[in-house]
Structure formats: structure tokens, C-alpha cells
Image 1: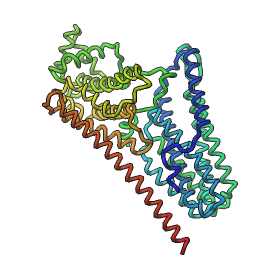
Image 2 (image 1 turned 30 degrees about the horizontal axis):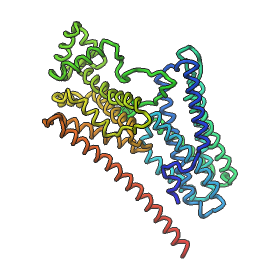
Image 3 (image 1 turned 180 degrees about the vertical axis):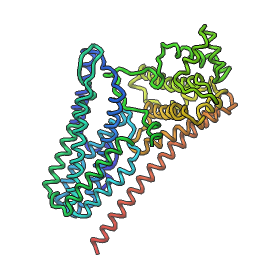
Image 4 (image 1 turned 180 degrees about the horizontal axis):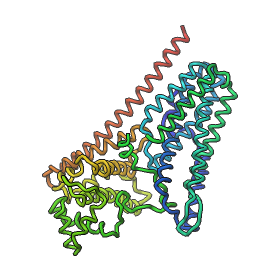
Length: 231
Length: 259
């Protein structure tokens, strides 16, 4: 039952979203050809930041995917009322993960060197908290999504501030590539924060060592983000 | 860790080429195809390296051909740190030039080939690119052992140029071929395996006496086949282990609920 969403194939069709994105891309390319020339090359620092952003987001979504896999594995049959909730969140994470996987291949970013560790750690974290109690699992979700939401916001801030490019004809603006990335991250951030609300609705605050759990997991997540950006 | 980062971190985010200008024509080299350095090094590589090998004599010979003074020699080597004991910096630059231009050459041919037959043509296989790169070595084949010696000398050049360039080569071969790329640790192991296959094929080529290097290409195809097969073994094992793990957990759970 676990192997289904973990399989690499994009079984779920997110066709509507992809079509919209594709349409946006093609239209922007046509605009480019008619309107103004190309944007100037990104600076080394800008390129390095994008590189890091894609890598850490991919690793993060991989982690999220495996956390939900762990939770689902433990909780789905014991607490049938949680099953659809977890399934919904997990499916969204799988979609996020696939999106960043595609970006990683297209933009030729190397993945994090520690992916085996992220997989193992995330699955252990998800199933471990779920084994304590369903509330603890929700507290785990809450902590993780808090960190991820903040992290995405930081990225959005940087993408907005630092990527005003000049075209060869002297116009200012953001390239469609950056705009697409920004809108993707925005959408994902909103979905992650939705998960946060879902977790709170499902009694995450009633988890027994609540403070210890959430603060501990937040610390782990922050360390993981810091590491995945670099290695 | 620093060392690893340096090695692996050189391939940075590629902005899309439709919207952004490309930064350099030959990225790790600091000069473009219209520069003096390019002219001299290209001339050397084509005319004099096949006879003289990778050394200063070849460079001086082409400087004479082009009517340039010998001071250009030091300008060419300016990017590399001076080395008193082994290879002169200008020769290091020549080796680097060889690696970088040959790497671009395999994908350039690909672009012009796909541009004409775009829709109908299926993408090039990894093996084709691999063989094409080896074919570009043919003119300098008798001096390959010398080149490999220069490249593998422990030192700054090895870390800053030779190894990253090898990594970029295998990265390019995977990216531009029909080979499926991975999102996890396999990304690294695949590149390392292909790099190893390439270096061992080059070593074989350096010793190869068969007509038109037929044995080298045989050897290379076999090596590459081994690499892909090994990758398949690994994926299959991983999949099977994961399946077995979940099956056994589920079995245990079902037995527990029954009793």
C-alpha cells in the first residue's frame, strides 16, 4: 500500500495545473520574441542562490513526502478517520516533490548529497511520532510546516528583491523563469500552511510533550535545511 | 567537505537560454572563440600536438607558424599557477583547452544534427556520445598517456580543472543523451561510474595498437554496458528490499491483529 504513491511515476494527473503553466511559458516566450531582447546573464551569486534554492526545496519536499509516508503507514488503518486527511496532504507533497524533481533535472542542479539520510530520517520521524500518538504526529506536521512556511517566505523575499534583471534593450523586469518559480513556491507555501491548519484542527496542541516535540522537530528541520542548502 | 563542494558544486543552476544571455561561450575557459589564446591553442591542438605531443615545443611551433612572439606563451599560461617542478602553465592550459573544447564539440554536433531532423529523430544514446568523445581523441591518441599523466598529477590543477572537467563531461553526456537522470544519490554514482568508464577507456586507447582503434571502442561499449547493468541491479535490489520490508511488516501486523 505504501509503494503506490512512492513510485516515481506521476500517476496522479495534475494536468490542469501543468497545462496552465505550459500555456504561461509558451505565451511568455512568444512575448519575448516580439517585445524585447534577452535578459542579461544572471550574476554568479544569483545563479548560486537559485541552485541552492532548488536543491534545498527538493530535499525538503522529499523529506515531507517521506514523513507523510511514515505517518500514513502507521496511522491509516488504526485511525480510519485520519486516512483521507493524511492521504490528501501526502498527495500534495508528492506533487511538490515531483515538481522540484523536474526543476532539478531541467535546470541541471545537483541533488543533495545526503538524500539517503533525508529519506531515512524523514520516514523515521513520521512513523516515530505517529507511533507515540496521532496527536504527536499532528504536532510533528505542525512543527515541520511552520519551518517550511518560513523558509519558503525567506526564499520568496529574496527572489522578489534580488532578481530584477535588465534586458538588452534596457528594460527592467523579472524573467518569466523567475516569475514561474516564484508562483510555484507561493502556491506550495500556501498548501504547506494549509497543512499546518489541518494539523492544528486535528488536535496537534493536545500532543503530550507538546513543547518538547515541536521545538525539537523545528530544530531538526532547521538543521536539515541548513545542511541541504550546502551539501 | 570543501573539496567535495568544489568538485560537485561547479555545475550551477542553468538559466533558460531563451530568456537569458549565455555568459561565456566556453564556460570554464576565460576567453571566447575570437581571442588570441583560442586561436593559438586551437592551432596547436590541430597542427602540432599530433606530432610533438602536449608540450611547449608544440606551442612554440604554432606561435612561429602564426608569426607571434614567444611572450604569448606566458600570456596563455597566465590562468594557471606557476609550477617549477612538473608541467609549464601554458601546457596545462593546452590540456584544459583540449578537454573543454572537445566536451563542447560532442554536444555541438548533436545540436546541428537534431536541428535538421528534429521531430522524427529519437534522442542520442549515451553510448553514441561516449564513442563520439573517444573518436575526438583519435588524432592525439599516441600522446594520450602523456596527457593523462599531466591531468592526474596531484596538485591544484587536478582539483580545480581536471576532475571538475571530467565531471562536466559525464554530466553533459547524461544530460544531452536519452539516459534517464536521477533525483537522489544515484545522480552522483551514475556520474562517477561513467567518469571511471571514460578514464579507463582512455587508458586503453593510449595502449591500443589495433587498426582505427577498433578494440578501444569495443572496450568502451562493454564498459558502458557494465555501468548501466550495474545501475539496473542496484535499482532492482532496492525496489525488492523495500517491497519485502513492507510486506513483512504488514504480515506481522495482520498476524498480531488475528491473535
